Length: 260
Image (tube, rainbow, N blue to C red):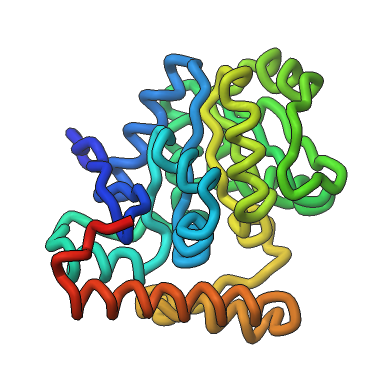
């Protein structure tokens, strides 16, 4: 980790807030914020989240008020560099962010809480984290029942998480459910919440990770589509098509680049 990370720089891509910065920048900001125990949420944005936010005012609004909106997805990084000349933009990969925050939390004496996934997945994820970071404090782990698309406030889980003393809550419910859950609970929770979705399954080993070359070339979506075509085809057809349309629009009409 760099000695003096810069603060991630909030900007906009197609009218949606995203931050420009590195993994080190994001980890430093998150852990510093976590020390204050004032709640807040962190979004891990990819093409799917960004295009959903364009169509979902609540999602776009909570992203504007987030502690950070990191760029998980090479297409977002390429768009920031090409359309807005943001050379500092780099990928902050969701599973990598979980591991980096856990490592930093271990060194700072901060603890983490896991919320999401199945009971077996949580057990595997916790074992994987402790194998990597033996001194990491895992303050708790909860696999919730099936939640509605926009979960309501759960006072019992708020009390449990706050009482655990956790500094960071990793939330793995999938987008946008996890973002809505974090938004609903952030004013009551003391730790900062990070929506990390698929990272639970990848760290647990219940799903396989795309090869590095696919991740570096923005093709992780294709790997996932091949794994779960029935569930994911519509998401990628809609999201990827819209994203390409936004990029082409801004390339052809530069004056409209920052239009919402």
